[in-house]
Image (cartoon, rainbow, N blue to C red; front, side, top):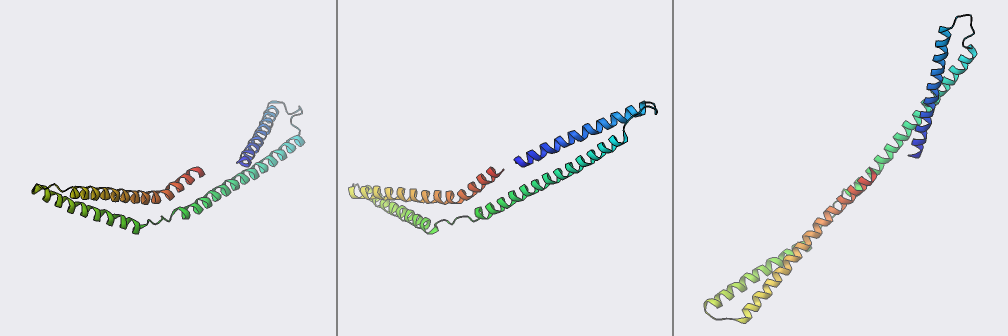
Length: 179
C-alpha cells in the first residue's frame, strides 16, 4: 500500500507541475496576443522547451498511472488467490460421531423404559396399599439414569453443533480480516 500511496503522490505532483506549466504557457500566449506584434513576446525556443517538458511530464504521468493500475491488479489477484485458498479449507464440514450420539440416544430410551416399568410397579404397589421401599429406590435410580442419559444426548448434540459451526465461523473471521 505504501508503494501505491507514493506513486499516487508522485502522480499528483507531476500533474501539478504540468498544470503550472500549461498555465504559464497560456498566460504568455494571452500576453503575446494582447501585445503588439513588434514587441518581443514569447521566445519560440522557450515555448519548444516548455512543450517538450510538458510532453515528458505527460509521458511520466502515463507511466505512473500504468504502474498504479498494475499494482491494483496484482493486489486484487493476491486477494482472490487468498480467498480461494481459504475457501477449500473451510468447505468440508467435519463429521459428527453419529455412533456415539446413537449410543447416547439408545441409553436414554432404555432408561426411560426402565423408569416407566418401575413407575407401573410402584403404582400397582400403592394401589394394593403396600409401600415397597425398594420400588421407590428403583424408580429414583431409573429417573437419575434417565436424567444422565438426557444430559449426555444434549452434550453430544451440542458438540455436533459446535463442530459444524466452527469452520464456518473461522472462515468468516478470516474473510473479515482480509477485508
